[in-house]
Amino acid sequence: MIIYLTTTIKTKWIYMKNFLFLEGAYLILGAITLLITLFVTTRPFMSKGAVKKGLFWVSLVIAIMTLSHFYITTNRMEDVKIAFEKDLPIICESRMQRKVAQTVTIQKSNEWMLEGDNFVSPNYSRPFFSARCIVE
Image (cartoon, rainbow, N blue to C red; front, side, top):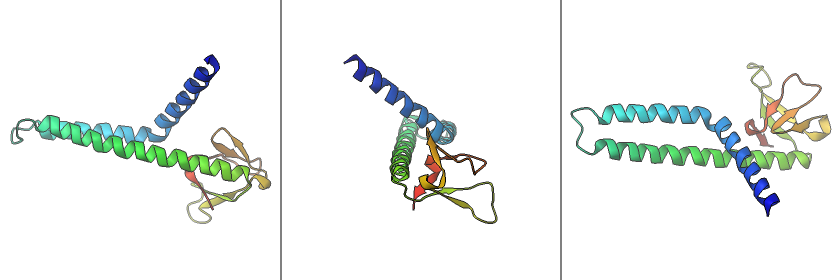
């Protein structure tokens, strides 16, 4: 029972860490949007109760969009990891070269390794985060 709880807590911590890492920019944009909503709904030309209604609905939309993006991204990360273990080709975006070859094809058989959530290779200078990859 204790081992199960410890494993569950570790798993939830990893997901929360991933959530903050993956969704950090969207959380900041959401906070800015809420501040704008607060500013607009407190103007004299707005009706009474506009603050509560505005903040509620904008918060709800931001929460739904952020959670759905996190769910989609983590599912894609799991699909990429499973495909990598099966030695299927994985396409990752390369931001180093903007003009030619904007993608890199990753396969386990081509000396790529999975370290945590990053694909690394001794033949390539930088790692690729699995959230930025898709299965071919």
